[in-house]
Image 1: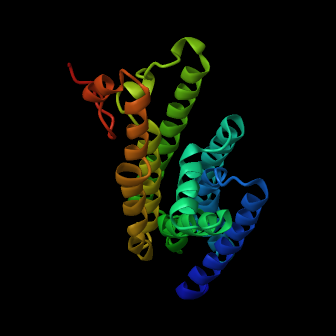
Image 2: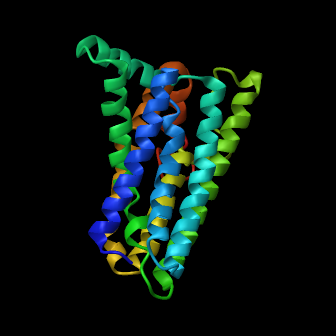
Length: 262
């Protein structure tokens, strides 16, 4: 395995090239919304870059395999959603605001606010799949982490599937989804995401060096609960869904739990 600094610099260079290519694509189509679909695959790319620079250890196989499975499912779903619904109004508003208040061009705003930011955040979140591919037999922590990651993938997959079916029914227009997993948490997809990365961290920490990748799961949990996940979704839902306040009052905000009696 190459020295740690060499490994991380190589991975950063690989990620930078990929993001720059996608930025060029965004300039041609004048839309950056597809970048959400690259969030998962960008981290799988880092896992594979590490894997190709290192011996195929049990931890490497497990981390790369689970990260790839998670990324393929999430990336495919978000790409389908982008193709179906078009430009994301969050990005449209962000770019319009920067152009109006700062006088920035579409290219500059997209590069700084969208592609560069997501590249840096993704690199930190993906630290477990970069630092954890070390030699050694799988221990109890790695096995527990793998189970948690699989549960997380299943949880967010089922949650997204249930929500997609709900929205596809015209009779549910304007209603709040409160069935299935959505009965026990307002954000099963975000909770599943957090489980995936804490599980991958467990596998990584089993190697010793991987324990230093703790900023990864901490950052993704912060992003999901305090920044771009729950706050953004809840703000939009409270404005657009008349029954969302009542739903929020009885339903757990993140960790699944039985509904309260309101």
